[in-house]
Amino acid sequence: MAKILVADGMDRNAAKELTNMGHELVIEHLDVPELKRELGNYDVIIVRSATKIRKEVIDAVAGSNLKLIIRAGVGLDNIDVSYAREKGIAVENTPKASSASVAELTIAHMFSLARFLYISNVTMRDGMWYKKAYKGIELSGKTLGLIGFGRIAIEVAKRASVLGMKVIYTDIITKDGYDEFSCVTKEELIKTSDFISLHIPFIKEVGPVLSENEFNMMKDGVYIVNCARGGVVDEEALIKALDSGKVAGAAIDVFEEEPTKNKKLFTHEKVSLTPHIGASTKEAQARIGLEIIDKVKEYF
Ligand SMILES: NC(=O)c1ccc[n+]([C@@H]2O[C@H](COP(=O)([O-])OP(=O)(O)OC[C@H]3O[C@@H](n4cnc5c(N)ncnc54)[C@H](O)[C@@H]3O)[C@@H](O)[C@H]2O)c1
Ligand SMILES: O=C(O)CC[C@@H](O)C(=O)O
Image 1 (cartoon, rainbow, N blue to C red):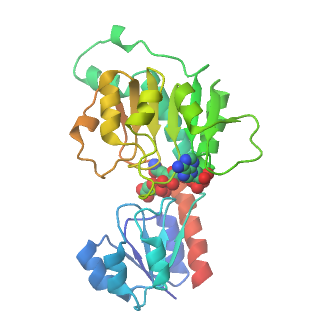
Image 2 (image 1 turned 45 degrees about the vertical axis):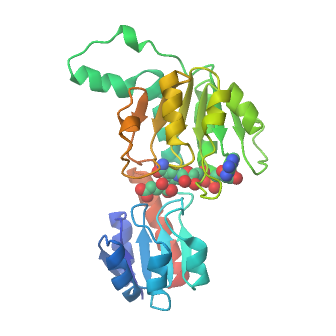
Image 3 (image 1 turned 120 degrees about the vertical axis):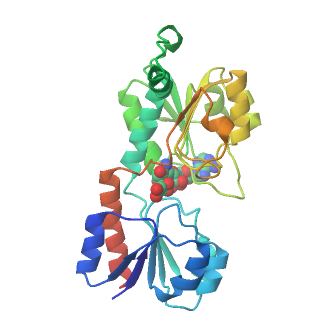
C-alpha cells in the first residue's frame, strides 16, 4: 500500500476510493522547502498545476521512498519530467479527462469576446448602459484557426463547426480522419483566421508561437483565445496588438506567471479572463480522479 501526498486537492470520491483501497492519503499543499524535507516520506505525490516539482526537489528526494509523481491533468510543464525519470521516479498524467471541459471554456470565451459578455458584466455593475458600444459579431460564418490539433482542439473543432464556423488547423504532426476540417500551414492559418485558438503544450526551448511577427501577419480585428499554456503567446506582443487594434479581443485562461501580475493585461478592456479553470468542472475532476485511481493501481 502507498503513502500518497495530495498536494493540490483532488476529487473527493476518488480520494475516498484510494483510502478504501488501503492507501494512506495526506491532503496538504507543501511549499518547496517543505517538499524537499518531507516528500521523501511518501511513495506518491499527486499534483495539479500549483505545485512545481523541479530539479531541486527531485534532487532532495532522489533515492527516497518516492516512486511516482501523478499530474492530475494534461500539461507536464510544472514537473522536470525527464530529470525525475532519470532519477528513477515515474511520472504519469491524466490526459483524456478534461478535453471536453477545456473545449467548452474555449467556446465560452469566444462568445464572451464576440458579444462583450466579460466587459458588460463589469460596466453594468458600475451602473452603466453601454448598449451602443457593444455591437458584437456572430461566430457563425467566421473562420476559426486552431494551433495544435490534439484531444482538446478536436473537441473545439466539433463544437465550432456545429455553430457554423469554418474550422482550419495546423499541427506539427499529420492528423488523419478529420477531412471535415482543413489542415493548413501555420502562416496560412495566421493570415486567414478570424479567431485563433491555441491548444499546444508550452515548451521552453520553443517559446511563444505567437509573437510580434505573427501578430503583424494577422487579419485586422482578429480574436485570440489561449486556454493552453501561458508562454505560448508572448504577453507583451499581445498587449501591443490589442492597443493598436490589430487584435480586437483576447481571451486568456493561462498566463506566463500564475497568478498573473501582468496588470496591463488583466485590466485591459479588450481581454476576457479566467484564472486557469479549463479543467475545473465537476465532471472533468471526477474523470481525472478515476484516471488517478487507475495509475495508482498500475504501480501499487
Ligand atoms: N486551461 C486548462 O486548464 C488546460 C487543461 C488541459 C490542458 N491544457 C493545455 O492544453 C494543451 C493541449 O492539450 P491536449 O490534451 O489537446 O494535448 P494533445 O497532446 O492531445 O494535443 C496537442 C497537439 O499540439 C501539437 N503541437 C505541439 N506543439 C505544436 C506547435 N508548436 N505547433 C502546432 N502544433 C503543435 C501536438 O502535435 C498535438 O497534436 C496541453 O498541453 C495543456 O498545456 C490546459
Ligand atoms: O490542474 C489544473 O488546475 C489545470 C490543469 C490543466 O492546465 C492541465 O494541463 O491539465
